[in-house]
Length: 229
Image (cartoon, rainbow, N blue to C red; front, top):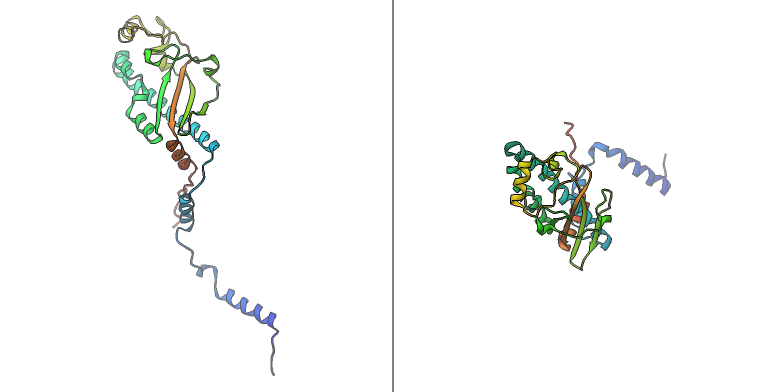
């Protein structure tokens, strides 16, 4: 007996045979394929828009000043415990810390702390009241084609800071205040209470540093997965 197959039926049977011959465990996947795809995507040159640069300026400013605040609390806590205000007083300048300076170099940033009531007269600045509210949003601007500015208020929100900037006779002893006046004769940075603004962080950043930070911030990173076997 002779059998004849119509073209469509023959093609269907051929495809079915091929699929049945290749089971799922015989398919060879590219090793680390997803990771390779992410690396290739990250290497693709992306156009960074002006709004992206302003967003990155805020991210960079927040990261730098938050890091400086954490380092300040850590260092002052250690110094106050070991030697009191006399040991801590020279270290109330977090913008000069090596760890803060290292991050500033990466971001191509210059951080400063400014106040209307500074301890060091070099930090004197005329700051409008609306820039000192605890809930003030970050002030981010583009000063020129290559330079950006970031600013946020500094709020006294840690009891530790009262030992240097609180009420004289209550938080600061007469002997400690004498040490402060000896080193900073024109000191104005006392008399603060918890929750009060003390000044602002103001940071100037270069465009190249901001753009690089935006790229790092938006780069996809593979999350580590536990090995099952």
